Length: 108
Ligand SMILES: [Zn+2]
Ligand SMILES: [Zn+2]
Ligand SMILES: [Zn+2]
Image 1 (tube, rainbow, N blue to C red):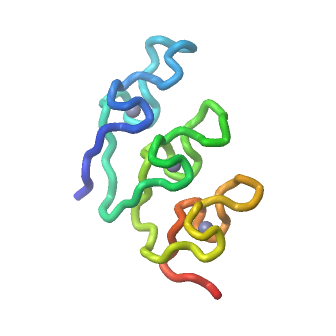
Image 2: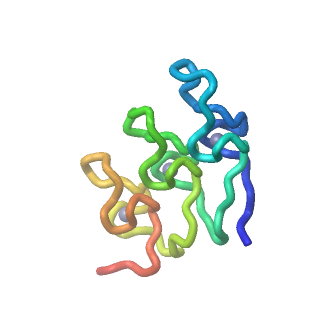
Image 3: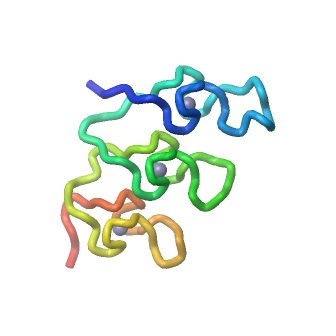
C-alpha cells in the first residue's frame, strides 16, 4: 500500500506547473488528480528539496524523483559520496545514490 500526498509538482492543482505555456494541460506527475502515491518508506527528495521541479532550471520534473518530491526505498545510510546532498560536484545527481542522498549501504 502506498501513501497519497498532495502532488508537489502542481501543488495539488492538477494543472501543469508551466500553465502559461499550455493552460489546459494536466500535470504530468499526477495526471491532473492533484495527488501522487508513494511507496513506503519514502524520503523527501534532497535533489529538488521536495518540490518535484528540476533544480537545474529546465522546465521538466526532477530527474531524481520524477516530480513526486520524494523517493521510495532509498536505504537509510546517508550517501558518503555526496554526504547526503544528492549532488555530484558538477551539479548532476550523485552517481552512487542516484541523487537520493541515501544508500542501502555505503561503499568505502
Ligand atoms: Zn500534479
Ligand atoms: Zn526530486
Ligand atoms: Zn550520493
